[in-house]
Image 1 (cartoon, rainbow, N blue to C red):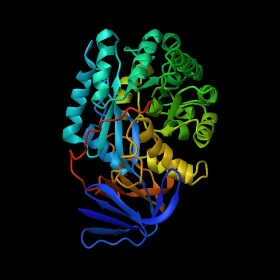
Image 2 (image 1 turned 90 degrees about the horizontal axis):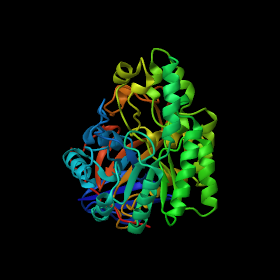
Image 3 (image 1 turned 90 degrees about the vertical axis):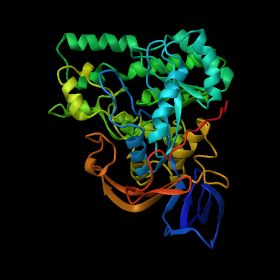
Length: 458
């Protein structure tokens, strides 16, 4: 099957140019002017932007946290992602049974995604306990294409610093990445107990119990661990604060092997949302919490300056109805997380490129190319080049959209961005040469997504 995209404005992480793209057998076969085909489908893009499909390296589909299960499975979640211009996800696997192997979760998640996913997918390993067997098993996980692993500094399955250092050393020897949820557990626990004991149970105390300093201290500790672990590659997930960014910026200036991800919620929202009445503040209970407004522009500057490499979503959808049922009397009982896998691309284009916070090339880099490079998918993903997978998104820069929950495909009862007016929106998504979304309508097939065995890059 041939597909010819004509008259598009091609945008990559370093170029903008007007040429046609010929796709054959799911791959980009030619890029040039005035291309023609004798058979197949021809789509005239009328000058609209054609870019590498989005790569979201932080989702939580099918996540079971004990008290709740995320509303999006690998069908609804990847469908929503596709409608938003994303063609690849890397999902953070949740915790499995106590003392389970690394492959236990990988096998479960692969089984779930294989029958449901509509776009291509990979997984980050999750380290929920550590012993010699787990350290040894990491090698076979890497051979199976899992080239990054997540460790938590908080929650019930958190690791101690010295355990994380062992993980870093082992992954460094395998050429794999350590990703970290960086918050200081002990101080958070103390603050939570203090607020609850005083009857301060509203959503705002979720944010107050996880202050910026808990993120900053955790990042400092992990950078120190990384240095001691032979400069192991370190990736900080969901960076939420300008002060945390300053620590990373300093470390990068010193040559440390550290990378940072932020998410739209930390660029567009602020902690006044927690004060919304009728328990609506519970919509924004996530960890780390959304911060004071001054952090928004500091993080935007971090993206523009190259100290934040990726923008992912941490898509973790629990219904607002459930959040109220569980958390209205006590914020510590509210499931953590918020939706966003469908709105990431449009938000970043409209408010990043459209408001001159970042260039259009930086936009492509942070939503597609850099995550593909960091996590072993480039140049098959995140690239418009001969031989690359024909994973593409088309954005109409003039299309105006007001974000409304009722128009989204995420399987959750609210959006964090209700009522936001955007200019510039994805109108077509192509996955391995197949048009799967056209004008916000999914026209692909359930289960068409493929598992991605990722490469090591370190």
